[in-house]
Length: 403
Image 1: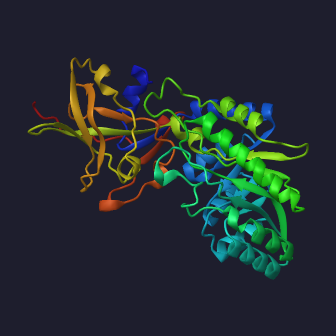
Image 2: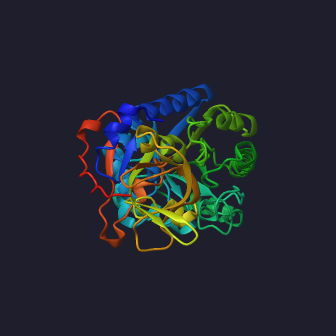
Image 3: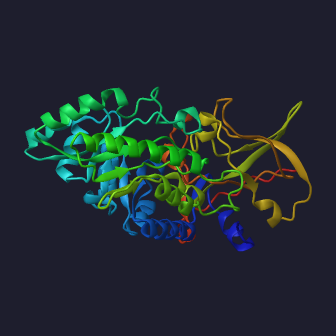
């Protein structure tokens, strides 16, 4: 992953910090945009995955749109160069204030999640004297075979409009005087690795729902299939670029698409996950009765995925080869937060590690820094970019101790 010179530079930086490989991000964006262009698919980046300003500006510079789930995300996306006409706004609980700001910005579409929200959108647009461009978010009742906390397309989930409300939605759309029907939106979950099975089913279900609404007299000009493409957390260097081509090929094969219809997707994790690494240093090596602990200075407040989802991240000791370490040992790698769930990985085999070693927690570019917090009043992790290493804050060397 890193050469000796890069490791030497990173070891000088105060930990913990997020490191973003901007070259890898660019390569990922090129792969995504080229594949999307070949398939005639429009892309909106899911801002919730990583809202770092430099990351957002790099993505918007490629002509990609934004998928937002809060009013602040809408404002942030536009500030970072995403055009309003390529910005969509989803979320089951949009406040009136958020809706008003997005109406004033004249965004591409509100992905409307309930019948009552549709009424609110109509009323607020009427109050402002504007028209709200609305896509109905459909709950397709599809199992994405992913963690229960990141599945969104089952009837038991809070998201979208279910089939039993389709007829009521059609009647309501006809009655709303300030709504322009923009199309239909679908989303079934996140970290989907059964690409062909899950996305082919989504496309077939989407085709059925599109046909239903068009038979009722509503031309579906836009079909938004959401995001969810997974990444390889266990072997980050083996699949460093996600297989966007497989995803888009699956859409091509299974979605009924008439001439003039625009197809949209909303990737987030697959765009930014692999370019981000959380770096931390070993504070203490602690021998227990049955385990040996590596206690590091990054905690669950910096990256909550393992504690929240039981998520796996590959963990590497990048200092070991630099200092010529020999031998391996089994460790539980844990953080400093006062919670027993603050565990990075249990039973991990690493080179024999010592105080001050630099540890890399890989594939942390998505749902990492953006979900961080100050629990235990801990400082938030810093940010380092691969092309601006010199701007990073220099670390204070750890106090040497005899082994």
